Length: 170
Image (cartoon, rainbow, N blue to C red; front, side, top):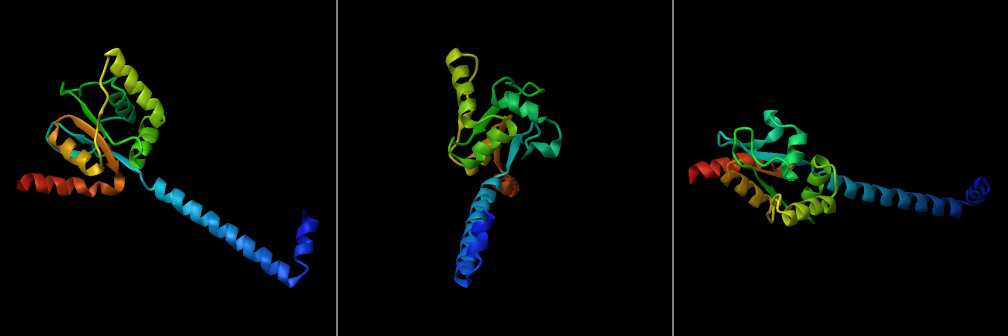
C-alpha cells in the first residue's frame, strides 16, 4: 500500500488528484456528520400536566424517574400517586422526536413498543397512548388533560410558557 501512495506522490499531477480525492472524501464525511448531528439535535423532553394545573418538563420537578416514564408508556402504571388517571400521548411512528423518545426513555425501538401496545390492546389488559399529529397538538392536549404526559423536542420547551399565556388570556 505504501508503494502505491509513494508512486502517486511522485508526479505533481497525481499529488493534485490525490489531494482532490482526499478533500472530497473529507467533505462527504463532514456532510454526513452534519446530517447525523441534525438528527441528534432532536433531543426529547417529557412534559407532564401536574395536579396543580401546571404543564412542565418532568425533569424540572425531580418528582418522577425515567423508570416511571417507561412504566407509563408501557401501560404498567395507569394512575399518578395521587390517584389521577394517566393519559399518555405520542407522536406518529415516523416522527424523529418519537423515535428519539422511544430510544432514550423506553430503551427500545419503535417496532418493539408498537408490539407491546398491540399485545396490551388485544389482550384487553391496557390501552395504547393516543397518537397526535405534531408537537403543537401534543402541547395543546397535555394542557387540556389533567394527568396527561407527552413529549416534545427540547428546543420547543419555550412553547410551554407561550401556551400558558395563551390559555390564561382566553
